Length: 187
Image 1 (spheres, rainbow, N blue to C red):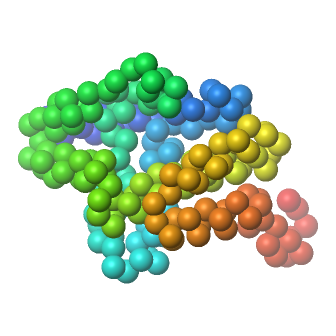
Image 2 (cartoon, rainbow, N blue to C red):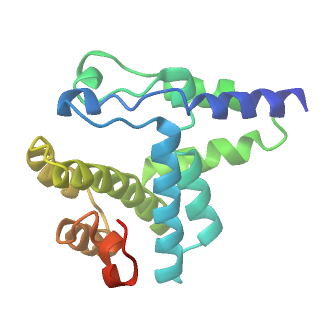
Image 3 (cartoon, rainbow, N blue to C red):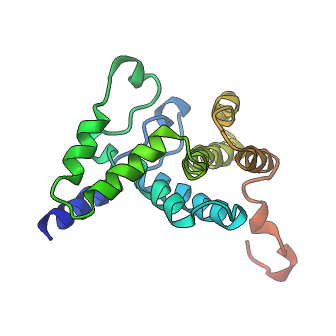
């Protein structure tokens, strides 16, 4: 149980680790845990509209795809030009002593290989979580995300991910808030 308790503390640390790319935008912020939540929720949506996908595996990948960042931090693409992360060692160290360590390691490795449908959907959920954040920032007046959109959308691997990205880009981030606006007097 000690190894499991340590894993839980390690996963909890993701709430404290900021995603580093927002520094370049000049506004916005998000922790790795914040990102993992929305990526997992997108994975849930994908599991509901892609019945051929193994929903449990997809959700597991979305949930733990960045777990190693509790040890390595979140490196943006500029930092990755100068630093290399030994993710294999981080996976080995974080799963040591866990009765289900091999399962955690296998899920992360499958996500990284991006060969299965579930891994490709999880990858797209990861990217779409960023698209949502960028779109919200753009809608709030930050023009920085405009240059990022083609790069992030260009990394999508599935037609369903590409279709959802297109819809996100064509939907105001606060549109849902104003649906049924006449139903209440306060905003």
